[in-house]
Structures are given as structure tokens and as C-alpha cells.
Image (cartoon, rainbow, N blue to C red; front, side):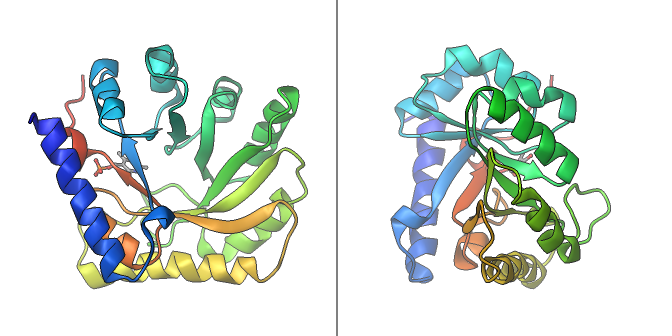
Length: 231
Ligand SMILES: *Cc1c(COP(=O)(O)O)cnc(C)c1O
């Protein structure tokens, strides 16, 4: 067994255990393999080993690798998205996880309308309050959702957040449960074009905590592909 195979097997075991511990069902948690800096041949090996969903944080990198990867694989855009790049990604992305402004949602709506697609999106919320992180403030989330719900060609599927890289477990847990609470509050409003079915949270450091706190989409890179080497 090569390293990729071993890593993937270990991650999948850890996911299963966390799901079992939290009394959830396996079908309710999807693994997104985060492939930034990972080349297409390795990505294809991961797909061969069962990966169905991949996550990238840069549009450029999606475009570079897109044609190399089988078309039944789902691409997730998980990083900050600039408005001028939207037109390159709406025909490719299963879910855009990083929507944090009405202007961005409007541009996605415009481009999705052109190709007659309903683009699934998540609202990125900065629950931790870390300054370096993208995402809207928790108290702004409901208002943003209300405004986006008027757009015909985007559909909000849920929320996304990132926990700080180095934080004690209880703090990380609080951030993830905080995101879940925000999604429950929004769900009560029963708005058009919005369902709060997805919580995208948890990375290599903290995906088990995220699963215990209700994550439906976990975004794991390093634990699968090893430490990233930036060119
Ligand atoms: C890189 C990245 C991940 C994966 O991080 P790992 O620590 O390598 O698992 C998850 N989410 C986002 C938004 C990322 O940019």
C-alpha cells in the first residue's frame, strides 16, 4: 500500500469512528479531498481510491487541472473568490463554499443565469472572529441570506467556517457548534432558495470535532496528501 492509500484509509477510519461516536449516519458526512498544490496524477489516484469530491481554493488551479480529472468528480470552490473570476467557475463548481457578500452572490447569480444553472453556494461565516479570515460576521448572516434569497439562480445550501489553526479543542468546538446554531436560526425563517442542509467545517486538524458538532462536508487536505509543498 502506498502512502496515499494508507492516509486515505486512516482518514476514512477516523471519519467512521467520529460518526459512530456522535450517533450520526455515514451518508450524512461527505469527505472533500482538498487538492491545492496536488498534481492531477495524484488526484486521479485518489479518485481511483474512491474520492468523489475535491476542493480547491483557487480558480486558477481548478482551470489548470479541470480537464485532467474525470467529469463525474464534484469540484468544490472553498477559497476566497474574486468577482472577476466567477465566470470561469460557475460551469464547474458543484458548491461554492466561500460566499461572503451580496455583490459576490449577485455576480454568481448573473453568471449562473447565463448558463441556466442554479448554483449551490454556502455562506462563509467568520465565527472565530479572527481578523485574517474571510467570511461575514455571525450577526450579519441572516441579513445576507435574506438578500441572497431573492436571487433566482443561486441556492444557499448551508454555511461554512474555518477554525483557527492553533486553538484548544474547546474553543474549536465552540466555533463549530456556533455555526450550527446560526444555521438553525436561519432555517427557522423558511426563506426562498435557502435550505440549511450543509455545514462545511473541519480540516485535517479538527475534522473529528467538526463531525461531532454536525459537519456534513469536511475539507481534508494534509491528512490525505501529506504536507503541502508550495511551488
Ligand atoms: C487548505 C484548506 C483546507 C484543507 O486544509 P488541511 O489542513 O490541509 O486539511 C480546508 N479548507 C480550506 C478553506 C482550505 O483552504
